[in-house]
Image (cartoon, rainbow, N blue to C red; front, side, top):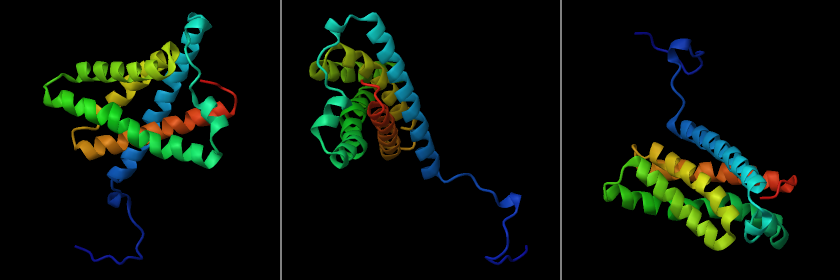
Length: 178
């Protein structure tokens, strides 16, 4: 065994896997961007297929962009909403369903439907259809990272939501109105 000093360069044999936190952060970023792309695809397809009379109330980020200062909007969209929405949209319902013995697929469907219902009540049919897709994705992410524990699943899903919201916020500021 050879003693090494802290000044020695690391060899390829010393390469270790990325820390779990970094892996989870990168996973959250990837899932968030994938969810954002899915939501915009659903949004554009739904707007193309559904007459405007059925879209519902205009409650997207574009509305809040005019009602809040930019720092408050960023805080709301990037920090507050992901924490609250992950708690109410994934942690509570999916943990209850897990304790009731529901399958993973059923949990994703129920999580997505609950999320769509909340968005239908607050924003109409268009928001509900888009929320159905994002609710399914975020429920999948939560359950995908649930094995190590609730904290890992919650943190990864919350970060994924934050990344999704940042991408949507940027899109709204560039004129893509949800």
